[in-house]
Amino acid sequence: MIRTSALRISMRFIRVWQRNLWVYRKNWKISFIPPFLEPLFYLIAFGVGMSSLVGNIRYQGTEISYVSFIAPALIGVSIMYNSFFETTYASFVRMYYQKTFDAMLATPLSLEEVITAEIVWGATKSLISAAIMMVVISFFGLIRYPDGLLILPLAVLGGIAFGSIGMFFTGIVNNIEMFNLPVFLFVTPMFLFSGTFFPIENLPRWAQQVALIFPLTHLANLARSFNYGQFRLSLLWEIGYLLLFSFIFFPLAILKMHQRLIK
Amino acid sequence: MSTERFPGTRSNFSGQYIVEAEKLLKKFGDFVAVNQISFQVAIGECFGILGPNGAGKTTTIRMAYGFSPMSGGSLKVFGLDISRDWRQIKSRIGVCQQENSLDPDLTVLQNLEVFARYFDIPQKEARKKAMELLAFIALDHRRNATVSELSGGLMRRLVLARALINNPDLLILDEPTTGLDPQSRHQIWDRLEELRGKGISILLTTHYMEEASQLCDRLIIIDHGLILVEGKPLELIRQHVGRDVIEIDGPTHELRAFIQDRQLSYEDLGHRLIVYCEDKSELYQRITRGFCKGSCVMRMATLEDVFLKLTGRELRE
Image 1 (cartoon, rainbow over the protein chains, first blue to last red):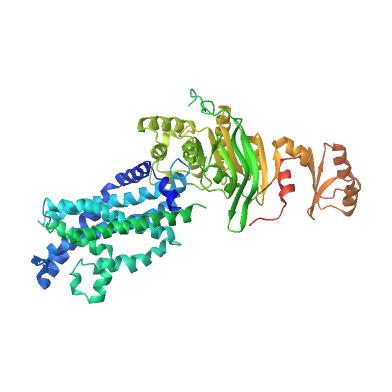
Image 2: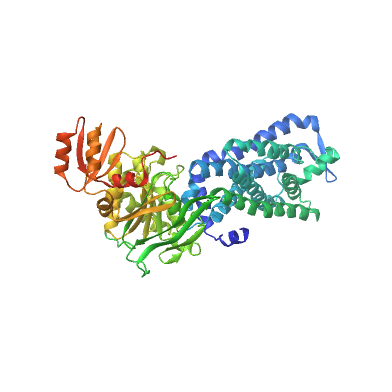
């Protein structure tokens, strides 16, 4: 099944991606607001509110301020949210309520192309939001250029990883309410415990091991390391993990959507 | 639109049939939805698949446009194999699905333009074609309306226009007028007649007998995944029902005896007797004079009589 699936993907998937872009452009003023305000809220809350309690944080042997610690991680969180919510709730609405995929499948598009486009679109939204957030965070002087620009390709990789697993959930949930499960059991724990707001070293040993399974741990760590120009060989492992995660969940997403839609 | 030759003629395909289904089989687990049916649609023909709910109509045409994989048999469209050359086939057909699948995020015009892009039609050409089609379905004045503002009838017309965006050689329609008011239904029929006049082939499912009589050159009635009959609407009526039908409300024992005595073909619904006959106004007069207590009507036989006679009167699903 997967072998034949692979053969059914052509560059035509871009047409579906364009459809989503078209809709996005119609509502861009609204779509731009969350990535614009999100970092502002967090930086004000944590920077002004918490910084005095936390002070500086030791990260990779150097002392950095608390806001410097969380700022790149916030971009990582946004990368996760944008692609995950796009390929879960938004894709589900298109698939189930709007029958958009059914209509597409009556054209020369294959299901594999439709799903690929949805995941790539999710990654695109991650990229857009990462870019907007970087602009906002730059005003706080917290993005280091040019190293920080590496966060942009990272947003695409992270977007593919989280978009794929989101699409996988879309392939298996019975109804839209069921997305609450992966959100509360997968996304929310990651948001809190992936070295986003405090170093994972502060967690008990077993929890650190669990945190290493979370793709956001690696995404946040990569974003932070890229931003501060701390290039180590171990980062390759983290990139590798995100790649592996994508390579597993991308075909799984296609498989599950195939089982769901093609009858 | 009017100046354009319809692609039934531009087709480089030289065979006789545009669709050839051979022992088409579809199973869902143990359930056989379509049981090895064979049929052909000739070029330029409007071919109908009729049947009660759950008969296998939608399943059949979903296989024909490459949405559902077949469990067995073979299906050729334009002489190409649907399981292998699906992309080539799909680029030359237009499909109106049963459920409304218009894009509510986009305007009327954008719905057509986006769809054109799925067929790799260049943007400029897509705009031109979309405007032509909006004129064809008389919706050009509402091209910037969002889809949710449209009535059911207008949405259906837009779905039809969308199915024509790629100049298809074959139009596949799954219950194109279900749920529409009579005005909208006739609008759709008019458009389909016009398309047929231009040589486009049509494969449609319906459970409106009037629709089938009006549009279809040939049809099959299917039930439980099997073909019950195949033929031209009028021939099927003559063959299975006759010319006229007499309906008698509240039939008496004497009438039943009389009918049986004469060995007429009839159906007994208890409170009503339906007698099929060959233009026997003499028979009608005898019945009205001798046996009719309540209402007693003679009318022309229709496809609906054939349908009900063959598929039974009990409710489905």
